[in-house]
Structures are given as C-alpha cells and as structure tokens.
Amino acid sequence: AATRKVVCPDGVHTASNAVCCPLFAVVDDLQKNLFDGGECGEETHESLRLTFHDAIGLSPALARQHKFGGGGADGSIMIFDTIETAFHANGGIDEIVNVQKPFAAKHNMTAGDFIQLAGAVGFSNCAGAPRLEYLHGRPNAVAASPDLLVPEPFDSVTKILARFADAGFTPDEVVALLASHSVAAADHVDPSIPGTPFDSTASSFDSQVFIEVLLRGTLFPGNSTGNQGEAKSPLQGEIRLQSDHDLARDPRTACEWQSFVDNQSKMQSAFKAAMSKLAILGHNRHDLVDCSEVIPVPPRANSKAHIPAGLSRHDIEQSCYFRPFPVLPVDAGPATSVHPV
Ligand code: HEM
Ligand SMILES: [Ca+2]
Ligand SMILES: [Mn+2]
Image 1 (cartoon, rainbow, N blue to C red):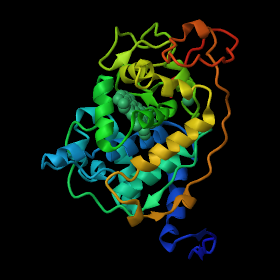
Image 2 (tube, helix red, strand yellow):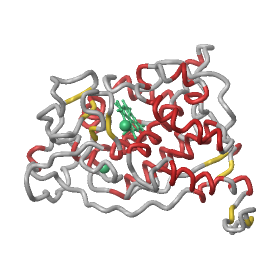
Image 3 (cartoon, rainbow, N blue to C red):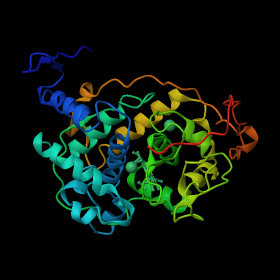
Image 4 (spheres, rainbow, N blue to C red):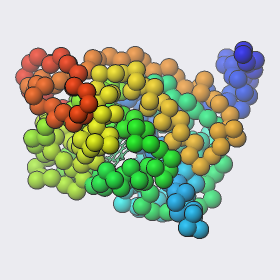
C-alpha cells in the first residue's frame, strides 16, 4: 500500500511521519561533525559498539527474580554514564559517550534514540553495509543497567549464548551480530596497540572477519604473550578476540559462522534483522515511529571474499563438519599486514 508523505518544514525533505522531519538535519550534522564527512572510521566503529552496549542491558531473567533487569536500548549508558562506563565490559566506551552527549543535547533527542540513530548513520558509511532500520520514540532511561549484562571476550561460548538467549537472541542471531566485528578494532584488549582491527578491511562491512577468524592463529600483534580475552591472530597488525575464536569453532555456532564466509547478501540481511531487534530491546515496536528513511544508503561492497596474501586454504581451521569450506581466491603478493585504524 502506498503511504502518503508529508512535506517537511525545511521544504526539501518528505517524510512518512512529521516526527521524522527534524532528523534529516541531525543526520547531516552527524555526518559532517561526528563521522568526519561520512567515514567508516573510529567514530563509526565506536558508535556501532555503543548501540550494543546500551541495548544489551536488559535481562528478563533478573526481572523474574524480582530484580531490576535494565531497560535495554534506553540510553541508560549515556544518562547514567558515571555508573555504566565504569563496568569492566564497557572499557573505553566513555570516549564515544562523551563525544555523542553534546550532539544528543543539541538536537534535543532522548539518549536511547540518539545512540541508535548515530549507530545506524555511522554504519551507513561502511562499504557493503545494509541500510539499517531506525525506529524513533524511545523514552529516556529511568535507571542504570545492572552490571554484568555485557558479554566479555573471555566468557565461554556457553555463557555468551546464555546471556544473549536471556535478551532474546538465538545462537544464529549471535553469529549474525558478530558481523559487526568486520568494521571494528580494539583499543583496550592490548592497550599498547590501540586501533588494532579484527580483520584486514576495517572500513568495509565484508565477510573477511568470518574468514580471518577461522585462520590458524600464529601470533600476538603486540609485544605481549596474550592479554585477557585475546587469542592468537593469523596476521601482523590484526587482533583476535577469544570469544570470536571460540564462537567460530564451537559446534553450536561454527556452521552458521562458515555460512557467512562467501555470502555477503546473507550477511547483510541477517545482520540487519538482528540489529532491528537489538535496537529496540526493552520497547514495543508498535510504540515507535519508523523513520528509516533518514538513514543514508550505504556504498556498495568494494571487495570480494578472499584469503589474505601469504596464507592458503590449508591455514583454515575448518570447524563446520556438515559442509565443506567454500573455495576462495587467495590474494597475491607479500604476506598481508594490517594497519591500525
Ligand atoms: C560475544 C559478544 C561480544 C563480545 C565479547 C565483544 C567484545 C568486544 C571487544 C572486547 C571489543 C574491543 C573493545 C576495545 O578494546 O576497544 C569490541 C569491539 C567492537 N564491538 Fe564487540 N563484542 C561482542 C558483540 C558485539 C556486537 C553484538 C556488536 C554489535 C553492534 C559489536 C560491535 C563492536 C564494534 C563495532 C567494535 C569496534 C569498536 C571500535 O573499533 O572502536 N560487538 N567488541
Ligand atoms: Ca571488514
Ligand atoms: Mn576504537
């Protein structure tokens, strides 16, 4: 059915609902002044991580024990930032909270809406990304999230899957959400090498992370013998989380992990669907207004799935026993080393 559109007061945009109109100017401001003119860089990566760390603060299991389980995607991480940014699993998140806060205030948005809007806008700068949904109208948080709801990279697969199940996600959806680590780097896992990416293409939302996490780990990228939550990586300059390593190899998740290796469109649709759930945890979608039209259309993918130069299919630790590993081209040239972002 065709939906009637309203002309916004700016005379330029049309919107399906008038409440979406002011968001076009917010998007322009964010692109120019938060995302460095539309980059898939550090602020984009941090803003995407923040959508997760706010939203996952929701536990029906705690609520069943008559304890406060958190409000989900309610902006509590920004409103009660002195409490939540001190949680161990939120290490380093204070930086992006402090950067985003004045933007949220300036545009008079609730923290919960702003965090999810900024995450979706920033992510639209990453080549190969799906255009995320954005629903509008989250009320402000009334309390901080309880501690220990954000997964840690040193948690077991069993613990991680249980935590996500509590928040409403299947193991397949957990794997889909970890596509986020395709546009990501770590500042605090090995603090001596901030900005060390999880894959060789940290500004492209591609399947390299699913490929590279399955390569045999041979080195630690810093001058360490491994930090808490870190596993050996296959490439100079690349870091691997213990949790990603384990999820790629666990029988409960390995086949879903492998299914993304050569399937960009599945990765896009599965990530988009899981993010639509994540972004409204703690809310009813019928109480919100669909303002997805304000999210820019992402650039198309600019790379093809490959094994990094210097390695081969023999370096893949095949972990799905039901399907062979897809045949991938191997990059030519000297051994790949990854640059900080
Ligand atoms: C098993 C669940 C997860 C664990 C254990 C985990 C853990 C981590 C860790 C330790 C870092 C590095 C932080 C730093 O040192 O700076 C990180 C980065 C990141 N995570 Fe996750 N994560 C998980 C799931 C997710 C999900 C569901 C998202 C989805 C939005 C996400 C998005 C990101 C992004 C975008 C970054 C990069 C931030 C940057 O480059 O500054 N993560 N994650
Ligand atoms: Ca990537
Ligand atoms: Mn960072």
